[in-house]
Length: 105
Figure: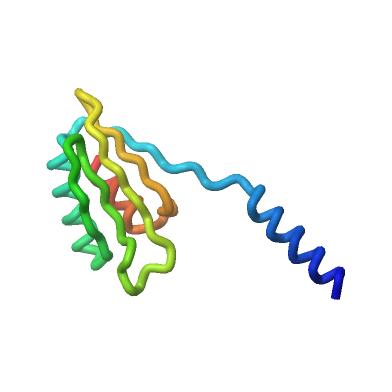
C-alpha cells in the first residue's frame, strides 16, 4: 500500500513538472473588429461554441462554460498599433478555434 502512495505522489510531481504547452501567437493587420467578425463567422459555420468579451484594445473569445466543452480555449485579440496580436491558449492546432483564427488572419 505504501508503494502505491509513493507511485501516486511521483505521478503528481511528474505531471506538475511537465512543461505546459505554450500559447500560439498570430499577427494580423486586420482591425480588431474585422478579425472578430471573421472569427465569429468561422465558428458559426462550424457550429462551435463561442463567447466574446470586448475590451478597449481588442477582446477575448472563449468557449468556457459551454456544456459540450471539456477543455476551453481563450483567444485574446490585442491592438498593437499597426497590427493585432492574437494569442490562443488551450486550443490544439486541429481545433475549430485555431483553424478559425488562422483562416481570419
